[in-house]
Length: 449
Image (cartoon, rainbow, N blue to C red; front, side, top):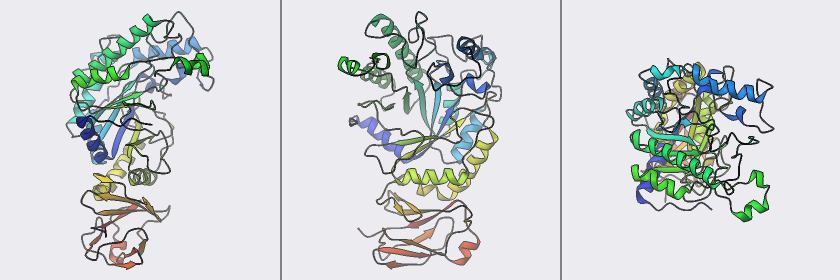
């Protein structure tokens, strides 16, 4: 069971984050030059596929990508403008993925974008994380730092003395406490740099759930090679981070405990609302990182997923994989622009809302504003290009004095009570001049208590 956060500063920040409802994630690193999967191909697990037969050759070539990484098209202001227009209220950026390559100017390793061996290091914007955070912060977008707890480049995580059979340390930390302590100190110093030197940060998004405490009993009950005590003392790490950022949200993903301030179902939307604050993180395309021929979800699909998540009380964190030159793929830009057109009319049904049972009513997804207004987001079928003449909601019983609007149309629309529900009639003139596509939103000013 998730432990309830009690820090009032963190609780207030969580409330602000829940008001945001929609965020942007970005996977970007040296691997983007290949249009390949982030980090995982250098991990020796049976499910991994690579473009080379020889692992050592592949790993050398992968790590050598640092010497060619030169994303001269990097323009975080443009990215922030697109995100803000699409109604995205927070960003989560991969400051360091599992491969250990740092997209910030860490002092703990030379495997970073600002190292002289990286050609982008001479660029005035070489400290990518700082530039990106500054640009998004200027658009009043909350800042989230993705940080991988495992680091497959660190000799104190994957020691050169042993082979690397899987994603875990290639040694037992309990048997090699000095080595693990060095890695722990390395991790603390890098996170301290991020929370100390990069301005106000709202979210520390920690990935790599296999880096967690494991008791001696748990080790005995499982295969010891797959169950290692990788204890970073998260309470101490959280205290360090919050000594610089007192209201910091910490997301120690999938590790039950006080430092998992919200849940993060990955790539799927829960069938029912979750009992704690939560966020569905999902790629806009098929992969998290940039692939040149990836398949992107349609704008309609993405808008429907946003409505589905928010109706169940969650946040929607939508990921874009950036290419090796520092560009958003054109397919991603088109989808952001389509979402922006829809959000320009309907954002009040998303931002600052909360779930209201039963969440789903026919083809509508329900949300509730803080003033008590109910929003019914009608999800259009494929080929359905205009709103229907009538929408019946069986779960919402309006007050006698309730006003009903179709967002994007100024005039009130007529309605009548049907049992404990409401039958809404949309005028033909609104149907002929539909304010948007993909989904339409009915706003009911207030319902009976």
